[in-house]
Image 1 (cartoon, rainbow, N blue to C red):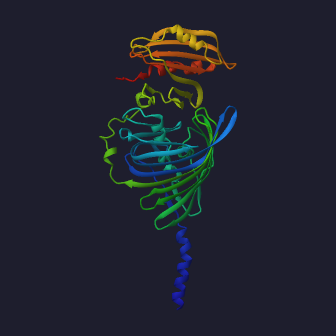
Image 2: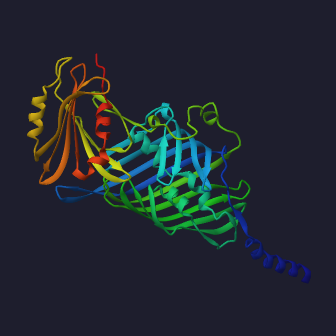
Image 3: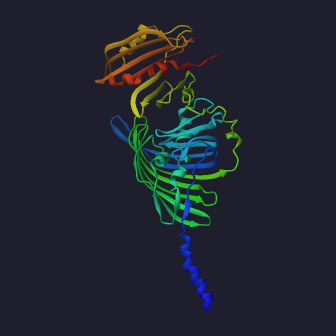
Length: 438
């Protein structure tokens, strides 16, 4: 009886020691490895919009689901730096006040390359230009390239903590630039071959030129046999300032991620399927975005430095950002159609420009009839002046197609931003293509 009691005492005494044994939480990434991910987002909060000097609060709700296979192509700073993803599913829906929006990835853009860099996440499709909505859909979900960096990279015991490195923090928060953070990991339990850990803290960074502050509480599961993170629940309170291309907002977001290591490379990510993926620098043609006028009047393939900030049946508004700084605004407007082979006289367009509400020209810098790179007629007038008493430089363009279709493109910028814009206004106008109509 005594021996039996002593055995029980020994087992009880040894139990805490066993659970306190350090476990290795490390998964060095390697090129060629593949995983399958399921990532779901649930978001709720509000946006703050200023109209006529009055601040309005708008309800915001969103849900998204992404299912994809991912193959690591290159590694840098201890994390995947370039990955190929094939999306089985990529959908998002949002309710902004009473308006409902939905987005989905088309079948011919399911292969995406994700690049992680010090300037934030960068995604492109080897098959051709994405729309801005498609780009947001594949760029703005939780970036699994950060996962290895959420671990300590060494053996730790229950209760131990570790700092999250800045590279992993920026990737996890999806910042274009990281300002500061206090994210810290902690091992909370080890049982049944699984190590559970948390990541908590705050982070501050820049996204699309706006300051973003995050408060993060996350829990993860590390499979000790597979030596991989297999689950993650990431919750964040997101407070964003007004930016040059998006309003201020406050939201609560929850991401649920599940991850399965794949023993074999899926055929969608095999070498043959990735033949068009560049190994070095990404060609500029693969970074372009595409836009189609809702009524099919024209289309546009443009540099992603331009961000669509407004759209109606008659107008398209874009803003140009240079390293997060607002540089210029462009407005594309449908102009009255003429007979095929003709265009509005330059003098008539010039008079219309001069009478624009709130605009007073003080000095004309350019005034010429010219042609685009493909020979279409173009009238361009650039002038210094004032818009509602503020100094501004505006460029007015009237572009005519062979079928009589016309658009007017207006660029507005502060005088000190003219050099920063450079030739990008001309490039945007040249990129407009009129639809071929029967």
